[in-house]
Length: 239
Image (tube, rainbow, N blue to C red; front, top):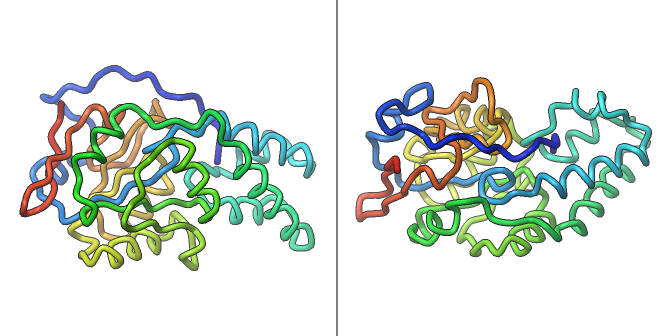
């Protein structure tokens, strides 16, 4: 949720990849890849900022309060619950859903996404997002993403990111062990959820261009890697 400018990082160096344990990603074959959506597959920054700014003004929430909610990567209903009282919650949660679902005009795919997804068999990848199902559909269609064989949204789980529920469910629906999955994420909450599920992590610096980002391998954008699918699974190769 938290508005951030798009990153413009330099190209990675294959001799010195950034991340906590690059070998955990580069030296393995994965049964499946679980992709976050906002900030990972699509750039929805401007739409997110407009929607949440409007919502905050309408509900008397300051910019400082909104920022302190540390919302990026977290489900909107959980952010709303942190910012308004129980009595106001139902209407406030419905309002942010309405604002976000209707504001999709400038949502686009991020660099490298089309190539990465086109090379993966449908049984090898899923979209796992903190969006509600209606919002996930609105943003996927606005950006022209291909339909995944498995889509996990906040509506499918009891707890959103940083709880691991969503990635555990994504792996289960693909019929694979979470320990054999690679999660591609842009946000600390999502990376924490992936670690909790036992997955390896590839972090992209789209929404967090500076500072530590706790992924096994960290790259500027998905255009910095190639995902090669073979009979044994998927391998990550630095460009």
